[in-house]
Length: 141
Image: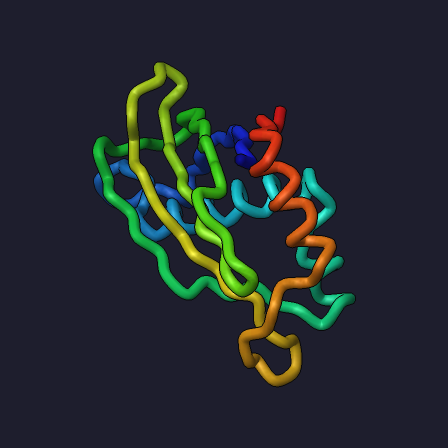
């Protein structure tokens, strides 16, 4: 299983009038965490696009448990829960610096052709990395 931790500090422009991080920003946070996890394994947007692939999000689900505010330090624990030849599913657990649960989320992306936008089999270099990590249960640090 691939896992990673991504830490960020919330910005002033990310909070709403109530002083809470605006709900849509959590989607961005999860996207950043997902990108960093994949980057550690040589799978990033530039590499995928150079190989004629895109990874659009086909589903995203989030449950908010507690609000975060301006200047909070958040840690996002990201893991790949499932993958197939055309999709990857990610789980996210967002916690405060005090280890309080802020939210949990799930996201699924699909491999599609860069030009036609039609789903297609993931490139072998991606499937090889995923299969190896799931077999060895590697924890990314």
